[in-house]
Image (cartoon, rainbow, N blue to C red; front, side, top):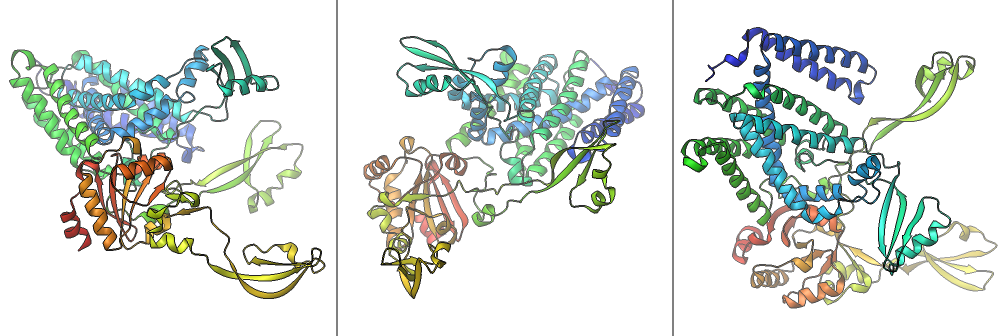
Length: 627
């Protein structure tokens, strides 16, 4: 058994300094590759890499690699627990991100491109996205716990290395995906599929489409397609966006994984000499690890990971000690942590995430979330090339520096090369986009919708300002509103003004209740992302709520993505008479993971959001909302 502190190496002080300088080298290298430090990139990277190499040699020479591995274990373990728990908090949301990667033009195109396999596809994994989502969450958390307590460190280090290689490949793919670049894709169609016939016709004139084979049953088509680039890797789910205002960029996610992979390599190198923590070592290893968990909990504004980490680590250690013949080992500890993770993910899948980072969370001001975007600012830079040295210089076209340089006159030395757009302030889309827009077509409006005062007002013909004109050529009189008035009406040889009048407003084709939701004193909304799969546990309670709200003239509406005939059938089957509106399915998935769910909005602020299993009864609503 190793003595405590033996892994500090030959010198605690010197090895500590070497580790600090090594971290400085990692920091400088990372900064050097950030777009804000492009001009100083060479200096930062050179100094950073030299510090990493020299300190690494020093750590090996002074037998400090186990010390470095110890620090790495704490950092990696703490981050893995938090990262895994954030995904486990919303496994359904993470599964949606995996579905994006499994689409044929996303991750699969790399395999098609690298190995010349145009028919390769990952779409068969889409139906299993939720399974992989939960699996990845659990693997992260279990590895985080094991690496902290030193359990099965050889196996754990291998798993950490493989996991980080996978994550790094994923973020590398995301950061380097070029939507303008094309790849060869092969699709197989049924002979009766009209799309296949269209492709065959197009192949006669389009060189990017080729008919590979035609049989009685199927048609095989090769086609050059653009990749489907995923803009957000989903590393921390919605947590980054909900806590700090934005997700990591693909490039930032990639460098985050590079750094983690670097620390994991240190653990892997030293794994032969790492033994399970002694009781004494756990007394300081666990508290220090919890400081890392606390730091990331602070970043994400959620302190439950601290409690979860403490509980998981202590349970793992207790099972190791009291598990008996079969479970008194680190495999038993792993099973215990897996069981804890399954309990947690089962709970959030049955209800809703414990911590809701989405813009529709309880307490959110929907109007603010719709207007918190930032308009990007860009500068068009003129790029000139030195004909002798090949040096490139950039000038802002309207700057005094460009005017003073008169570089365009120095044709023997400089030549205009191109124009590039440089990002000054990045564009940030609002938290709630225009995809949240519950609408109903004018042809679909029925008696349920007409019971809403808001709909009644919009359906009532309105008079607006307009003019009456005499059409000279046709000898007729026309009436147009100010909105419909054309510039051509000013030509007096064709039209003559007669008088100002009031005309009926131009009829609308659909009605949106987006703005109404923001302004309504109180509105109840039943959301269903898949109405055909929706099943309300307590329909009689919903009917009671609907009746009371109707008597008090408080709107209660259904928002779904289903076709109108099925909406009517579903309402009739469940004995409900709710006004129904349709919305984009992707946004409905973001609003709620439960199907259905109830949201209560007061003056644009979400006052309550309840999954199907926890929809409150009428007495609670009367006490806490209506009164």
